[in-house]
Length: 345
Ligand SMILES: [Zn+2]
Ligand SMILES: [Zn+2]
Image 1: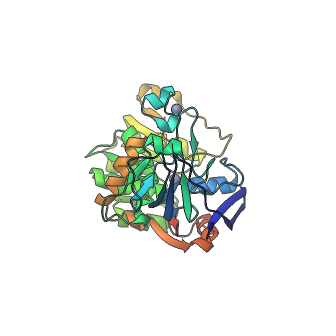
Image 2 (image 1 turned 60 degrees about the horizontal axis):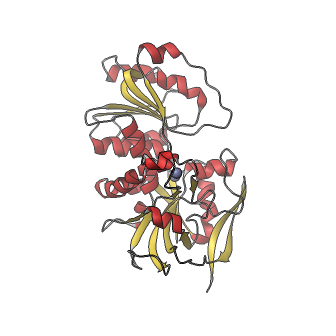
Image 3 (image 1 turned 90 degrees about the vertical axis):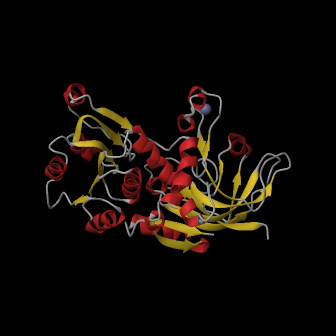
């Protein structure tokens, strides 16, 4: 048996399950038998043509499995080890890599976009990734399905740390999709007594409440600003996270962050989005406006450990599919059904 089932991205709107050769392991590579790969909203953005990926690539950057083959020159790894990966192929030498910010590497490529990722029976962990040490052994007892969430949890760890969210902080999360809800879980784990979530879908607000949000607002029915100001003595939230890729929502979030508070544009926007905003709001109120994208290697390591301390983490995955139906995992996300979907191999 030298073929495997894989999902192939051909072009926007076109992903198919196919039989392809199992990758050959070079002297510096490691082969992982995939057990679980979850679908990211960025995979959906690639599908919609909003974000680029190489034609013919196997998508999937949120993946966990076990080491089944090790290249002849690789040392320090054992077959059978349960792992997840940081899918960032960084050069290790540029200014950002030297700063420890491999997610900002100027030569960065990422498994699942430019190189083959985890929506397949096997994924080749290339030599460069092995050298970077982007292979994280799973803590005992952490299931593959939850371990595959290391990447999105690392992204959220980067988000809340960039916003200096601390025990006692108030946080407003605009958008109750999977990434917004991971912010809820993380804010709860960190010790935020006020976790405010806004979404126009009531089903998502229900999930937010179940996962630890303290105030849930549907802005189509009530004023989000009033709710936030009431909850924060009229100050605004210490941190505001925009977890929707809607440029029209940028100003709304800016209104609800307190003076000297942090505002993170967490979700990617459609290309060529333009937003007008009041620079004096940022100047006079000393707002820290930032974006975050992906995470540092170190945040991946901590996110993987942190998953064991968040018992509800697995609730983010509501739909699972077998390898042969990997494309259906995309369709449920496109239809906005449930939360995250995952493919089990
Ligand atoms: Zn992701
Ligand atoms: Zn670099």
